[in-house]
Image (cartoon, rainbow, N blue to C red):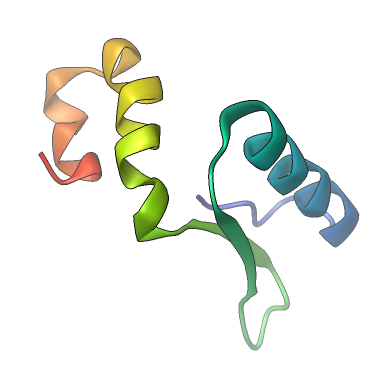
Length: 67
């Protein structure tokens, strides 16, 4: 999940929400040399992410979830 426009504190807050409210296992990756941040959802949480997102996702975007 690209979070390039957010400050680190904001990205940390987003990760906390993803973990506590949705049970997703996430990490923050810092991109070099820009110093921007991305949120990575680990493979162990992909099935949970699919359950949450699939009902709201257009079929043309299913490939984003490996379908």
